[in-house]
Length: 232
Image 1 (tube, helix red, strand yellow):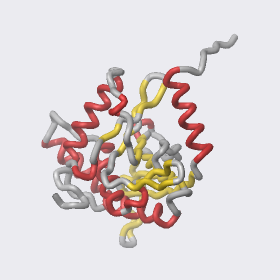
Image 2 (image 1 turned 180 degrees about the vertical axis):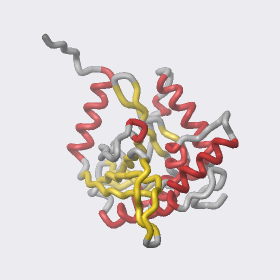
Image 3 (image 1 turned 30 degrees about the horizontal axis):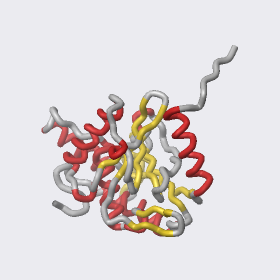
């Protein structure tokens, strides 16, 4: 006994875009393990003081990613026909799972927003997506995408680039792990990040520098109210 259903609607669109991505982009990946302890501590402190408006790890990572992109603008690009388009503003899409599919709403101008502002905008976008009230403007115009499966206990994964963007960041679960610090073994909150990038427009060294900078921003994170890059 088997059931069949047509490949249609959202599922068809996703299938077409993912096939287009794999058929056209030269996709390569870098992986890095990041100490999330400072970020987790800062988030807990902020949420304890703001129980009515708690921020998520994803909210903070979107901000940190924007800071890393500001340092590494060569990843905030897309390849359109025969031109590499570089963007001054940073618009980050965040993958959201919905019934029978995946939608990527876009947080505009992440580089110019505080983490609470990113949280409020993303929360509203996710609400509209899950209520099926989002508009084309909500899901277009992204320059980079973040996808987080940590809440499902996935240690790490490689995501497919969301065309026409040049890169996507995959976030795994944060877990308590033993690490070596100053010659001693200590337990820290560790997460695996995977950057997939289009090697046609982004080379391996700049991609690695982006991940290195992102790791530094995360591991030196101090407070939700203070942006890690600008200090503003």
